[in-house]
Amino acid sequence: MTTGTVATDRPEPTAGSAAGPAPGPAGHVDAGAGAVLPPRADRAERGERAQAAVERLRGSGVEAVAVTWVDNAGIARVKAVPLGGLVHAAQWGVGTAPCFDVFLADDTIVTSRLIGGPTGDLRLYPDVERIVPLAAQPGWAWAPGDRYTQGGAPHPGCQRLFARRAVAAAAEQGLALKAGIEIEWVVALAGPEGEEPRYPTTGPAYGMQRLTDLSDYLRDVLRALGEQGLTVLQIHPEYAPGQFEVSVAPEGPVEAADTSVLVRHTVRAVSARHGLRASFAPAVEAGGVGNGGHLHLSLWREGHNLAHGGPGPHGLTAEAEGFLAGVLGALPELLVLGCSSPAGYLRLVPSHWAGAYQCWGLENREAALRLVTGSTGERSSAANAEIKCFDATANPYLAVGAVIAAGLAGREQRLALPPEFTGDPSLAEPGTVPRLPAGPAEAIAAYRGSAVLREALGEPLFEAVLAVRQAEAEQYADVPPERLAAATRWRY
Ligand code: GLU
Ligand code: MG
Image (cartoon, rainbow, N blue to C red; front, side, top):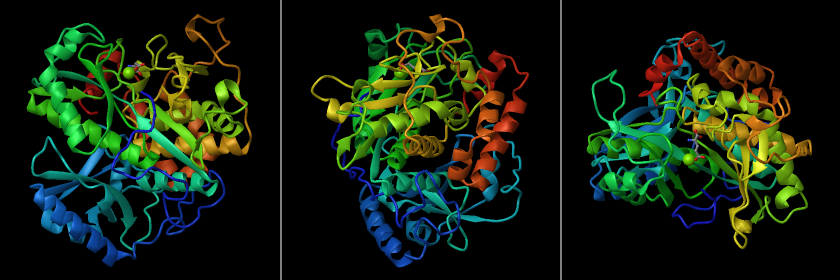
């Protein structure tokens, strides 16, 4: 995909627009109660905005609103309210247990040093600005939620608030970001649990035959996304059996993370209506090409794309180069947030276009960091960087927030990119291009040592993520690839 400017009905991200009062220094994300985001005191105003939303939604036949948050294992969890309860939910939140912060993808519950256990309650506040009727689930609307304590302070484990703080930290430096998350999925015939996937098309990779076989389905996916206010850039059959990809227009990082949740659940709902089942798991079948969740990012200052018109490689400005160098250097630890499941390492292997090497290159699909300049003439709007090694088991809020934190740290330290790598790094002189972690243990070790991520996430969130990752790494440590793929295939 490109991140060209395409009109959407949501506002363009601008520096300073993302969140309230000023955060701390670059990359610093204060998890302390109420320090960064406004307290939940604007209750009357939120009630009024929710009331206006209720009237709008009632006109679209909406009867209930699903409010989601994404846990540290990358699973979207939900609490729903009837439409008549939306105003109260917007004013007072909906009860949710803090133990969700230490849920694993298979619903096992662990504990972490600072979060977990059966006690306590949080309030989940629907983001009224983002509520949208769900085109493939008539009568339902969806909104992403932010989690606060009962006392009204930001919950330090809230991933969406973390992403908002990271955006605010960039804004403090006069920087805005645009992001887009590519969604790849495999569609199979709905069948009994445990059955090997059977595909509704046997057409070739990228083949028109696949589109023809599933043209009603794909049209309905496009229609639903469009009705939900999303601007689809393209949809196409991908490489693996039954695999497709859709990309949507770039937007602010938090909005892009929200959109990735919305797109996935829309694809799921449309699939169900066609007697199909969608998997966003990194390895639907062990050994094959997997589903990625590539994150595109561009960095802007005063309306100028910093990946264009600068003195650095391929026109990068010094700021963009520092930012990208910070991200590239932190990729081993960022995998903990961008590639949550141990199953992700079945996908993250050389020569699968998954970006298994810690290098960067212009339009290099084997580099974990692919620089995209766009065509001559559109570079000022289109130039961006794609993090290829991430997959859809990532909590998208953690992924964007952590990448921003790593990038801001690189920019602050004025890091330079290493030399570019062209071609397939697996064919390079052994040892010349570093491999990214080949399993969760290595990524977890890098994460533990990352002062930048620890500070950015704040201790409670950092530790909760660590507890979940360690538990899942242990859970699947000796599980053979086929069983790991089967265990995670329908969880994502
Ligand atoms: N499916 C590949 C992955 O696992 C990506 C293919 C592409 O370059 O779009 O990331
Ligand atoms: Mg793709």
